[in-house]
Image 1 (cartoon, helix red, strand yellow):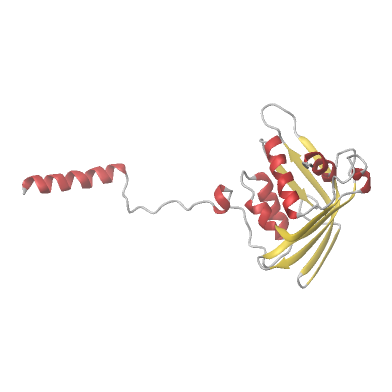
Image 2: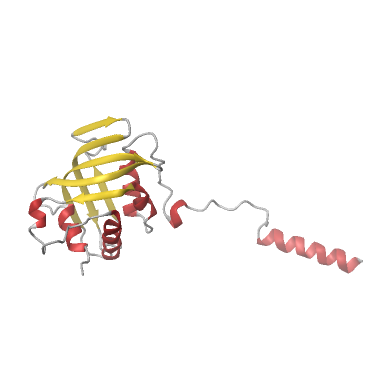
Length: 197
């Protein structure tokens, strides 16, 4: 009997030293290991931009993907279209956008950030009525390849259409409309990263 008590006591001591098995676990990050920066976009359509920022900077893609409407479309400036082979921007769907995002993240494994509107997230034009919203203004991406390489800066002006869907507000359309200084636009970035047959 003494051996049974001693063995039981040793098991309890070993568990206490290693950490109690009943201690609560730390919560897992949402989105498959992505930072917990997802904002449920069911009240304010501008929350879509916060979620796209989250999705671009994170390792995973779910925050970015969940931010895009099933009928998402990207529309480049005609000047950017002229820089690439014919058809490069044809049929730009959510699937195409996610493929381009994968290649951007593969080429820029350092930090990645994007800003929509001004420093405070304010656009030059904003309209919101019911389940649809539209924004027009600047955007800026800063993409680091990693190591000691200098970052690439992507800037421009765009029109963004946001629409409510079954999972809240989602970005339905991104249309580049103008350059910003001498920086390449997202159209140039997207065109250079799209794989074509």
